[in-house]
Amino acid sequence: MPDFITGPIGKVLGGSLLLLALIGGFRWWLHEHDATVLSGYVLQSEKVAAEETAREMERQRDAASQALDEFQKRAAADDLVDQQKQATLEQDLKANELLLSEKNRSCAADARDVDFIRRH
Image (tube, rainbow, N blue to C red):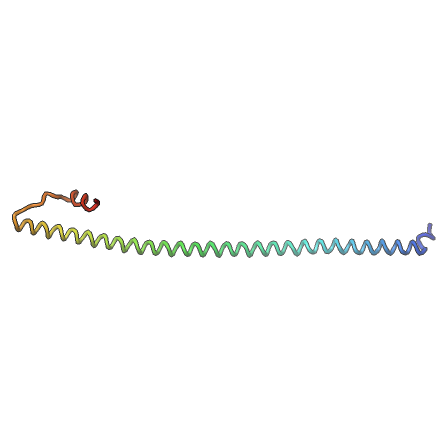
């Protein structure tokens, strides 16, 4: 048996086994290395996706804030216009009452009647 190991066939088999062990070890190392590198890429891509999501949420928040500000400005302007209309209406009513009182006439309409007319 020692002749078989030291002979040409033993040397070829031993070399082949050594070569297979080296190739297998390298492939195992390469697999582990690739897994580590890929996990880093996955973490990086998840980080980039989270940052994009955060930027989009911030953009939407800013747009909502601008829309709310614009709505509040418009509501304030509408309130001012309504107040002006109410003041004008009251002045017109007083002027009409004054005109009727100068002619010794009166109007039987009260505030509820005026509100009804305004609404319909």
